[in-house]
Length: 342
Ligand code: ASP
Image 1 (cartoon, helix red, strand yellow):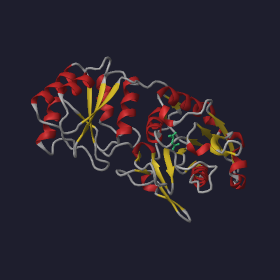
Image 2 (cartoon, protein in one colour):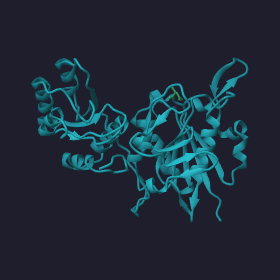
Image 3 (cartoon, protein in one colour):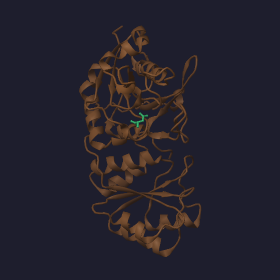
Image 4 (cartoon, protein in one colour):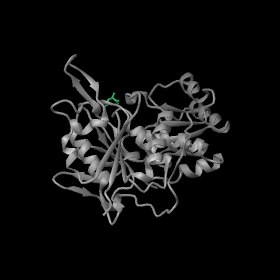
């Protein structure tokens, strides 16, 4: 059997920090020597290599040009490795996982994102277990095929589909959830893979990466009392091509004529308005209430049960990688990478 190889890409974030004995503060360590900090890695029966971003970035500074750098690193190493573990700050990890799921076409190998709430260099760190299990999942194969050929987030004891995941807790080790899709694996004594929910693509196309992501989008979050100036400021921002409308419940928004007129005039100008619920679980069903039907009638597009992170990144991807607005609208109504139930 050929020895499997996994590449760790360290982008930055809490996980890669250790205590500097001289200053007693946390500093990033050199991931080339990761096994000095996590000696357990030497026991794996596969090879581990690592590369780091330079400079390292706190994930609050994440942006599409960094995603392009990341997918380019994966592209350059794709044929030499069996799987990838991306170490990333937790703050925007769900955005990066969602973006990667769209940018990596015909992915047949695992890309597992993980990080930690406490640095690897602290005694109670959650980073060690997250890193070790993420590596094990990235290397897991049956008949030379990856068990999970998807972009995922592994955190604490669950493996989630990346584009279904949201960070919801800034304190607990269980920092992420995926309310609209079951975990792809649950980890206890054994790693129990949830095979029926893992996406095994039948496409035999070659792996390639998208290297353009539009930033001409905005979020407009509904709240009781929102006023026309705020709505107009967002809808009329220069060069805006799509807006994620964060609605209530099953996709409901105010019925006031000034609001509907503002949305309709944006749609008439060619702006795509994507309706995503503020709720963590459940789906947009605009036909359910009168407050949603108005949106449907004026041409608002349903975001189904998409996370906000996926709505943002799917639009960024589609705006830059589609031949026409019609193609964008068609693809919003399709599950491209398992991101919506339809
Ligand atoms: N602010 C850090 C980041 O997201 C927090 C973390 O690493 O979890 O990069």
